[in-house]
Amino acid sequence: MPLLSTEEQIDVSVVVPVYGGCMALGELSRRLAETMSAAGLSYELILVDDRGQVESWPVIRELAKNDPHVVGLRLSRNFGQHAATICGIENARGTWIVTMDDDLEHPPESVPALLAAGHEECPLVYGLFPRRTHARYRNLSSELMRRALKRAFPDLNTEYSSFRAIHRPLARQLIGFKLSRPYIDGMLSWMTSSVATVEVEHGERRHGDSAYTLRKLISHAVNIFVTFSHWPLRIASYGGAVLALASFAYMMFVVYGYFAGTITNPGYTSLMSVILFACGVQLLILGVLGEYIGRLMGAAYRKPVYLVETRTPPGSKELPQA
Image (cartoon, rainbow, N blue to C red; front, side):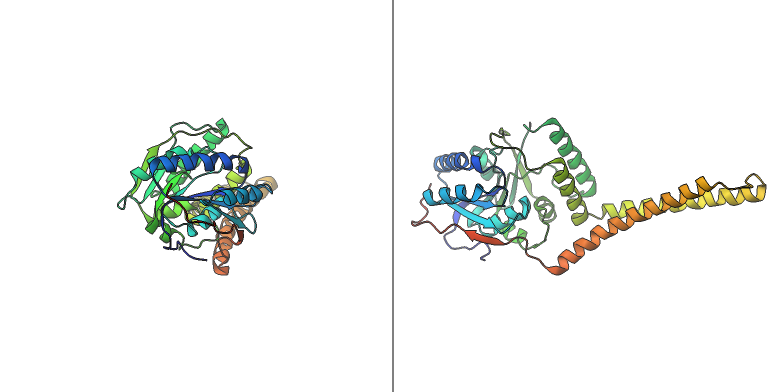
């Protein structure tokens, strides 16, 4: 599979991982075509089917059949949003690669604004949403997540989102990571601190529901922390040290009480409480270590980030200037 082939290079590649928003793809394609035409930019729209709905691939094939700007890629199974996005970036031909969601919450009309803010000295631009249209619990969980991530990763770009514009050289370096569980914004934060933001409107979701349930959000957060931070290990280490100090202090208290005569019959309940508490903390620490060992094993297997099962055939005519 070619890595960002330089053949037939165009201005912009728009990468959209498709999971649950296939009903919005027609409108997305139409609005993007109008925007690119008005801006005078050549472009391609790469739709990556991440196996969310069985209806997605027929919709993508039909769009690609009728529009030579549309390229469809179908993964062999669900690999996740970030892996699907990496797939699209790896197959992109644009000088700039714009990533966006499939549900029209990221307005295609804002793509030129992201591109205008980027240049060679600032290869990464994020779309910043002053107000989000998500449910209250989702906005609250996202804010808590951002604060926790900022403490765990001091270098993390503060205002990150999946609506981003990446310059081609930076994109080439990004796809070189080959992590089995990629986190794009964490990788980009490690790669560059030259980041710009552009305020854009957060559109309303018109079709379906968000694929990010509370369980998936928690799983995503755990993956980020374990893959990109030593923070859980430090918490486990500090927790173990505190437990050791507390246990030593309690032991000294028991020894003192024994010699002072204040403790003549140490209770079974207190003894078992301390033992069970200590065992629980030890199992928790072993669980944290197990998560890291699992990630190391995944890296050792060198599994591909994604597998493409099929793709739409190339258009019958050259991509025209928009």
